[in-house]
Length: 318
Image (cartoon, rainbow, N blue to C red; front, side):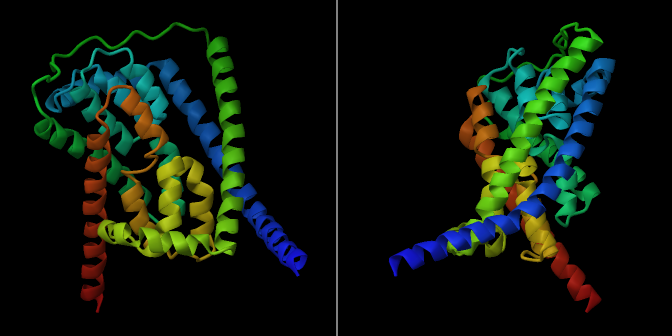
C-alpha cells in the first residue's frame, strides 16, 4: 500500500512537470529573443555615447532631487539595463548613505524597463501605463525621500563630471557583450524551466493554496487578490524578468484573470526583486528599510488607486 502511494505521488509529480515544460519553452524563447535584442541595442547606445548624453541632460533634474548630476548616469544605466549596471556606476561616485538610498529607490522602481515592461504588458497591463507608472513613481519617491530623509549628511547637488568610460575597441565590446549575454541566456533558460516545473508541483500538491492563506492578511493591505500570492512571491524573490514564465503561464491559462494580473503589476512594477536587487543596493550603501518600505507604500497607493479607477468606471458604465 505504501509503495502504491509513493508511486502515485511520483507519477503525479512527473505528469505535472511534463505539463509545465512546453509552455516554459515557449516563454523562455520569447524572453531570450527580447533580452538579446534589447541588450544589443543598449550596448550600441552606450558605445555611441547616447546614454551619457541622456545622463548629462538629466543632471539638472537630479539636483532638484538632492543628488549630484553624475548620479543621473547610474539611474540611466539601471533604467535601460539592470541594477548591476547602476551599481557599477554608483561605485565610482562619492555618495553618502542618504544619497545612495534616494538613488537606489529610484533605480529599484524603474530598472530594466525595456525588458520588464513588455512582460507586464503580456500579463494584462498597458505598456504605456507601466512605463509612466514606474518612471513617474521613481521620480516621485526620489523627491519625497529627499524631503523625508535626515539632511545631516546631505550630498551636495553641484553638477560634477560624469565618470569616464573605459575605451574599448568595437571587437572587445562585442566579445564582452557576447560572453555576458550567453551566460544570461543560460541562466534565464535554467530559471524559467525550473520555476515552471516548481509552480506546477506546488499547485499539484496544494502548496499554493497554503501560501495564499498565509499571505492573505498582507495581500489585503496591499489590495491584491489572494490568488496572486505565488506570483507575488516569485516577483519578490526572482524579479520580473526571471519570473515571467510563471506570470505569463498563469494569465495565459486563465488561472488568474487579467484584471487581477493588472493589479499585481501595479504593485510589483515598483516593488519586486526584494531579495537580490535590494541586498545588492544595501551592500552598496543604501538604507535597507527606507528602500523596502518606501516602495511598498507607493505600491499600496498605486494598487488602491487602480481599484478605485476600475470601480468608478464600472459605476459610470452601469
